[in-house]
Image 1 (cartoon, rainbow, N blue to C red):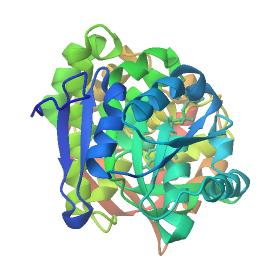
Image 2: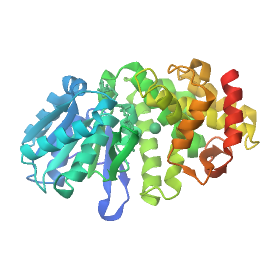
Image 3: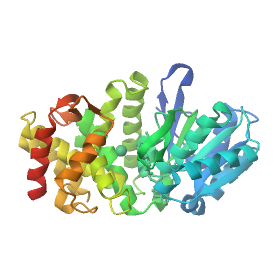
Image 4: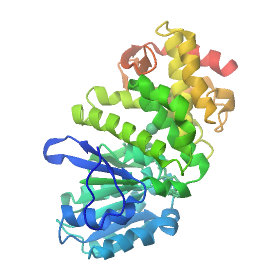
Length: 381
Ligand SMILES: NC(=O)c1ccc[n+]([C@@H]2O[C@H](COP(=O)([O-])OP(=O)(O)OC[C@H]3O[C@@H](n4cnc5c(N)ncnc54)[C@H](O)[C@@H]3O)[C@@H](O)[C@H]2O)c1
Ligand SMILES: [Zn+2]
């Protein structure tokens, strides 16, 4: 669906609605859309001031353009710039961001703009949920992962020293502006890692989209062929928007978005959440393991698991534990980390398994011994 151009908008957008009743909002997707940010905000909240939260890397590339768009629409803005990386999802940085929002006199009726990847979206979104018991905010995602996943759905938060994302709130944005041109400055490795989440939408619920990706992934990676990139991002956003609209608080279906994440989080934790293993790389390994494990349980044919892995490998993502850039953890350590995962209930493990490409389901009764035997085999392969 293409929205008509309004004054001040320079590029045509694909608009994906997130149907959440009084919390409904639009995701606008398109190349060059950052220039329309100010006009879009002004249309939604006339007279509001903004505080832009971003990291130093994103600020270097894109802050001036974001500020220029707000200024052109007559919107006053403050800037809050934090260091890049997962380390900023901390109590200390959260405190600084909240204090700077208050110091900038951002009040009820004003807006926070999260300009960055998933780290900034989660951090700024949680600050927005917290300051004055809740300010509205706008997501301007600048990584592929953030454009297809973290900016949509309202999960916000920071990390505890005891685990990732343990402190947070559900707080939906009022608008998401995904300018696909911002991804041109993203390092290739980060783009590729984000692509694991793109493939995830096909693998979990959309076999036709997965087949399309098998043919068109090069167009998604290349900035010039933005039609393919935009199409992929829009399909992912539509997929996530549908799931979130049906299960906002993850009591059921939303858990499917965790395909590959139980194994993946354990691998990330084993690598110490360092840059050695990016989240998307861990999810690629995790999805390959989830498909393998499903094949081992007789839920799918081995060839189906091979097809899923072959595509992830074709784009350069890791699919074998021996290729894990985070190193080879031991099975005891992995089982400990899996058991710490929030999806453990009464001794049984919950995994997202598959009955085929595009047919994921929640299995909440997985025997830990079976997982241990599987991982032992995989680690020795
Ligand atoms: N809320 C959710 O639903 C949800 C979902 C998935 C992931 N997450 C969270 O997202 C985070 C990961 O997000 P991420 O992968 O976007 O990481 P990130 O925000 O750390 O960004 C990755 C790196 O790319 C840089 N960068 C960002 N945009 C850039 C651009 N356009 N050009 C050049 N450099 C750029 C950043 O400075 C950073 O160094 C994790 O904390 C994860 O928990 C949240
Ligand atoms: Zn993920």
